[in-house]
Amino acid sequence: MNSLYENKNKIIIPFLMAAFIGLLNETALNMAFVQLGNDFGKETSTIQWLTTGYLLTLGILVPVSAFLMQRFTTRQLFIASLLFSISGTIIAAIAPIFSILFLGRIVQAIGAAIIIPLMMNVILLVYPINKRGAAMGKIGLVIIFAPAIGPTLAGVVLDRLSWHWIFWLCLPFLIIALLVGLRFVGNVNDVQKVKFDVLSMLLSTIGFGGIVYGFSISGELGTFFVTEVIVVVLVGAVALVLFGIRQMKMDTPMLNLRVFQYPMYAIALVILLIGMMTILSTMVLLPIYLQKVLLLAPVVAGLVLLPGGVINAFMSVVAGNLFDKYGPTKMVPGGLVMVLISLLVLRGIDEATSPYLIVGMHILLFVGLSLVMMPAQTNGLNQLPRELYPDGSAIMNTLQQVAGAIGTAVAVTIMSITANASSSTDSLHGMVHGVQNSITFGLIIAAIAFLLSFFIKNVREE
Image 1 (spheres, rainbow, N blue to C red):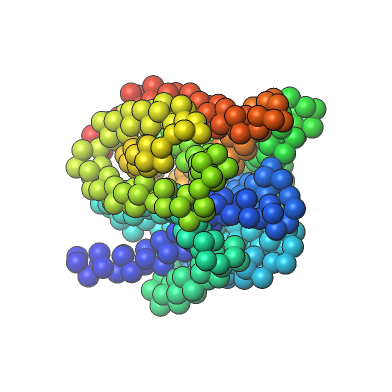
Image 2 (tube, rainbow, N blue to C red):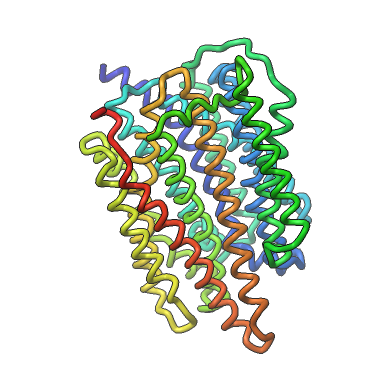
């Protein structure tokens, strides 16, 4: 039994390494937005596309992962994912202009779109239900810690080197993950000759892509209420409705929507989406605030965000073990109380706020999120039957990335609208109010998650 457990760990380690770098790349460039804007002569609303485009690609491609996990072996998908990630990282590292950098980000995201749901599915298949909490705690470490630590690592790099080195330093870890995976990753899934439905893929792309794109251009335009934004979002919404109808009528759907018949899965999904919106919007707002309002150097701003990320890494593993013992019913509401307190304090920050207060609230925020994300996710997936694991993982990961992209775009848009409403002579005050209003949005959606958390039941006890 011990040797079997060790083999499971060896299988999971390269997945964790690859997914960590993939999710680190979601936010690592946020700290470089100011430098990138200066280098390329672009506004923040344009530079944010390096993050939003990455998330948009994940949102479009992750739905296909359920099909890929049925059609191809675990090993084939792992290798393909790493090759995309390595290629995209090299393209981004050598990018001389903004468009090449953006291309590299898209190729990187293709790799991440494969590896993240694949890793989730592998854990569901190789670990028994009473051991999944600890295993998913490792995933929680990756899903929350990687985006949280991204700005910190980038800040340290930018203090001495150019933004290109953010990518060069990621490259060796991806190569090591590939080599370790070639040694240990085997096939844990059953391959089936399922048919690829082109219309489903088209509707999925238009749907998820339209919604994310619509919210993203709102950041560039500085408002939600323009024809371009409204039309694109409506087209995306209609395409998603048609996608859902088609999936329900197909014998072998691209995504099996029967997962929503399981209430704990549905509740967990909504809480996860809110958590991801909070994480990624905060990871955009705080680096901008620390550099533009408090006038901190990138390395100092990164160090301000470091303790929250480090403590979160520890807490993710602890939360996994706690989940195996106690379940989610107390952990999730308790974690959301911490999130609400931290956001309530952060919405009052201004140009006189001490960086130490930011450190404390950032720690509290991510400790709370570590007690929310993994327990909710594991409990929701545990309620699904084995045959729905690929679909449940794919839907959960797809919508988390879409929610992250929307959260990022909404945060930047609210900040832009508020800043633009202020006079040109009081731009700093407008920036402060913009950050405050964006955090208020996060506070409202976190309150919704808190109310939902009281409906969670422990699946194992059922």
